[in-house]
Image (cartoon, rainbow, N blue to C red; front, side, top):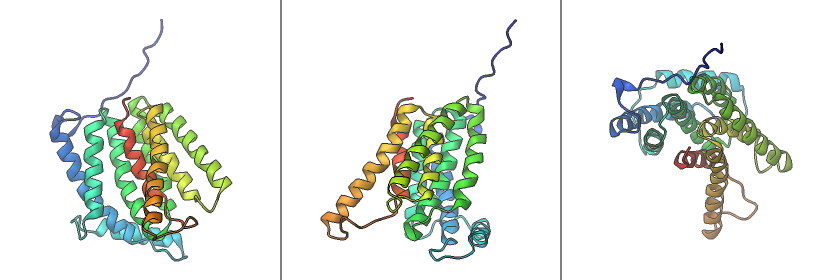
Length: 239
């Protein structure tokens, strides 16, 4: 006699609201708005100068915990986080995978803000994201696919970093693993889309800088925000 194989464990949505409905999308947008406010407070605690990164991270997280989650001018980060959260709530139809994506949206907002200002992707945000996402994805039944995608995407970025360390940083490699986890939970095509879209968005931005003569071919810019924007494209790929 064979034992039954455990399947995915469904995650109840707020107040039983069905996945993908306008009600849940609105709830996700509000969550994203609040998360964006906290992300702004957290990102403000990371500096671009060298120093004690552990103390910096501790101070940044304490400041974020104490922050009042109210959007502040120019409202860009809060609006972008709310829009991203609403987007994934619209497209992702698995409760646990959606929870993982919403966490990734919040963490990604903080990482994008820090990277854009300091050209850094702090380990204090990227490294804890791995166990958090693994725990959220474990009940979904898609953990193995997510881990495989994370390893594959991180490996690709690691090769690119090794080939041209001035173009990418180790922070980008760690971020690639996080993107691989959430995109891999949606499927192989979603993972490929996330990886390629990040480079596409970065290339479009670089061309824009060249056309407006704000940069030369040798200029560099933080790549993390474009990787994260590319990851959002993955939710449009049918799984």
